[in-house]
Amino acid sequence: MSSSQTSADAERIALRFHDATAAYDSDAVIGSINGTVRFGDSVALIGPNGAGKSTLIKAVLGLVPVVAGSIEVLGTTPARARGRVAYVPQADGLDADFPVSALDVVLMGRYRAAGWLRRPGKVDREIAQEALERLGLADRASDRFGVLSGGQRQRVMLARAVAQRAQLLLLDEPFNGVDTTTTEVVLEVLHELRAEGASVVMATHDLSIAHLACNEACLVNRHQFAFGPITSTLTPELLRKTYGGQAVLLAGDSSIVVSG
Amino acid sequence: MLSRLLIEPFTVSYMQRALLSVVLLSIMGVVCGLHVVFRRLTFLAEALQHTVFPGIVIAFLTGQSLLLGATAAAILTVVMFSLASSKTNADTDSVLAVLVTLFFGLGVVLVSRSGSFQHDLTTLVFGRLLSVSTAELVQTGVVAVVVVAVLIALHKELMLRAFDESGAKSMGYSVVTLDLVLNCLVAAVVVASVRSVGTVLMVAFIVTPALTGRMAARRVGYMLAVGLGCSLVAGWVGLGLSYELSVHRGVNLAAGATVVLLMTVMFLLVAGYQAIRRSYAPEAHNLYAPEAQDSYAPEAR
Image (cartoon, rainbow over all chains, first blue to last red; front, side):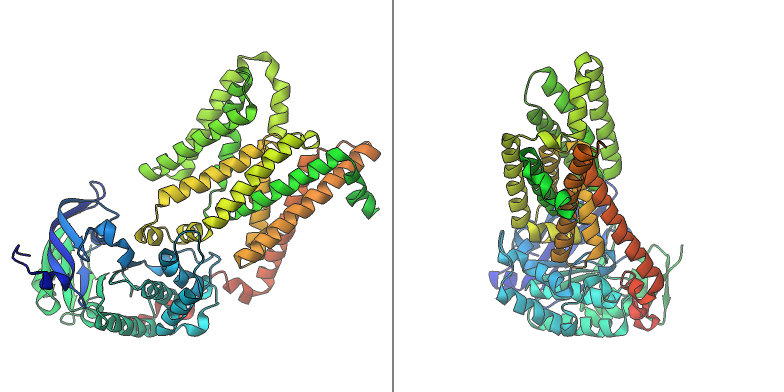
């Protein structure tokens, strides 16, 4: 973060927060975020509901203004980096009755590459089909999105991000309420993507998942409580501070039960 | 008998123009209507039928083209609606309710100051399908071409926006612009129908066949086919029926309203079939309640 940073260092950094404060309106402010995410890193964004996790994700996407400090995404501003960043929403927030197939949804990840007025072409279809295959859904390509299980739908949304060929993936609670197969497949694919050089930021409540999927963690509740290697960040003391004394830690470091 | 209903009436030139008019309205109505149904914008279409009213009144009082007045009012509605729903936290239904009452109130105030308006007003609200002029047909045709062309061009972006707003935003699409474009197209369809079927019945051309298609089919292409089929059959049979009854049987049946009633009958048939199929085949019902068993498996924790 020092000004003496060499360009070789800068190239390995996917995401840099410099005392960043993002605010949508006065109800959704998250401030004083400091830290860097290198290519291949995976960061767990952990904090209670209403902590500003999704505001921070939206700020990285350039959808919520950074009102103080700065966020540098893939070497540029969030808005300019958008084409190289993929957002994976929670699948259960999507209309299950919508007339699209699993493949149609994944193809949406190719819309930007196809451009205005053009339908995704043969190459795009192949990329989308490959992405579905990677997530173990090759045989469900033509099934309607809504007939898939919750976990399968979540995998389709990740397949869309894979098809986007993004360098930075932002995931909103990707493991919330999904089945074991989905958890395993998603973990595996995220590891592969990181090995290929992509960075991952995921909001999550689940500490055991965070340990499996991430090497870094960022604890937030309106402002940053910790940002760093996951083993030194997800400590009982820091978690208790972040959750304002509401956190009851069970089984060492694996899960949080929030009371009240 | 069938030819007397379906062919004979259309040997008369004004019936030919009426049929062509219905065909154009059906095409743009269904294409636009599917997006309206996907985006749950039905109430906007319904609101527009009321908010174009003061525009028409002002145009009438100042001797301007009624179409121009309706267009101006419709554009104003759409812009106000789009801004209010994107820039404030008010829900869309409430925004539309405020706009409808505002515009309609304005129209009523203006009408009450002018005595001679009532007759012309009726034709605008209910249309006069049987006296559509060739010039009006051309106007409708132009609007239909523009509406369908824009919807084809923006199909993938509009579908993405309707399905996943946050995803569309994250990919860099301007959701406000996409919404504004779709809202303007809905307005264009409503305005284009002012002379022929009237604003009130046009909402049926937008919503009813599209909803029928949405219920009957799973894929957009089939929805379009079913919707268009319903709309065209209703138009053809409805016009023939109203001609036959009015001319040969002495029972006056308004042409536009007959078409709309037939559309509704087809919608009810499909809805009824669906209801029966769902209550007798629980496995078919499950397709609509797709939460599979493994979704919230506790062992995932």
